[in-house]
Length: 196
Length: 392
Image (tube, each protein chain N blue to C red):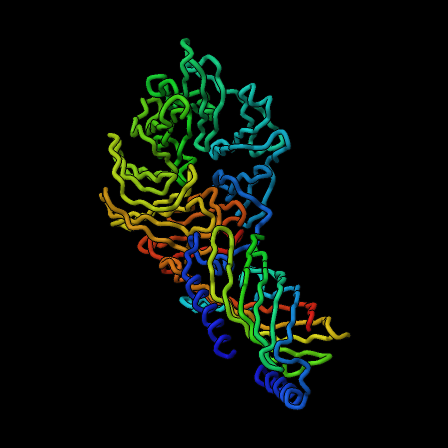
């Protein structure tokens, strides 16, 4: 099913990419504010090979959360941009304790469709400072996101994004290494973008 | 431009990798804690009071009052806490089907009143007032314990502080269990607490002794403690230590040996002659009267403990019979400890040896079974029920 969806996506975007005119030039810039929710999707514990899926007690133990961020990108070619994003994510656990993550990452985006509608596909790589109760850790962070942004005028655009974040928890302390895990989140965010 | 971009991305990656090695201050992984988190239950246990085995009933105290529950978990209210009468401590005497309890009621405190009722007529509450031939001036109640004793204090003719552990139990009211005069509790010392063994709280001192600690005021002295062992009603308490160690819990092994767990996470072998030998040090901390349940596998003891840090798993000190200098520590978060690792244990009740009811503050009550031979292994052995799915 996932493969079919992926193929459909490629089939849709590839022709658009090949035949659409470039709106952006090298040096064009975008500045975005994003706000939305995130769905704690899975936790995979490497040692015990436990795979916990979905929000709530008995699963990931996290409830639906919130996310806000700012990002800046500059085009290094008419169809690709590089930049960075810093955000703040939170979820409450089943026992109503606060989990937070501050992701900061470099971002590379490809714009197969651009103009009045932008459809950027972005890859991010960086770190995330995660904290829960007395524990905190600077973890790696990566994401893959797709956005749809509508520009009613020349500069301001309004969009929606989703994708997948991955946060590996790789503990340095030996006694915690049996808890090493990979966390996955699906963000659903609305954005306001200014471009020039 | 391409090279510059590559350098920027690589630099960010390297910095991130470096930062990723930062340590964290927790006793289990962040995602593990999240995955194991449980929704708080409305019931907040404070103390398990004991069974009426004749009719299969368990009595317990929560934040809201005293209740009893039958073996099918149907509960019944005995008495509720009220704004100006919040129940602070309670005791259930199964033989006489009677409950005693202390409240924070101002009038009760001023008049040294202990409230009591028969479990057959819970609506009829009366009061009793402890009396003593040892303490006749300025008598006041310090605390009430589940083994039918109450600690009282007062003064002698020379205004020296006196302390006495007496029974308030029907039929033997006022019987002295242990007396502490100014020889045992010098000037500058005050009552610190009575430490009872986990799951043995309801038993008489002759069956399961208690420790009574007094602390020297830091303003007038060093803040040191004097620890007394009380094993026989009416006998002179045995001084087992004058030191700066605050006791969290203990396991009375035999007539001469005590294994003492301290609030700063150390385990000592202590003789009744007062010789303290450090067996194990940990970075954990414990509350006074912390959960510390000894499991005997035939050749070793495994002292199963729950640290104060809610996120800490159960910590087991294992040592061979007769061992005085060394214990092996193990964190146990699976099997019987699965749901207790992220909970605050407030009280436990032994159904039979190694088969317990364990009450927690926010996460309900669990029924656990410990396999003695693997009590000190994090191998998933033993069992636990889901919260509030216990049976007895």
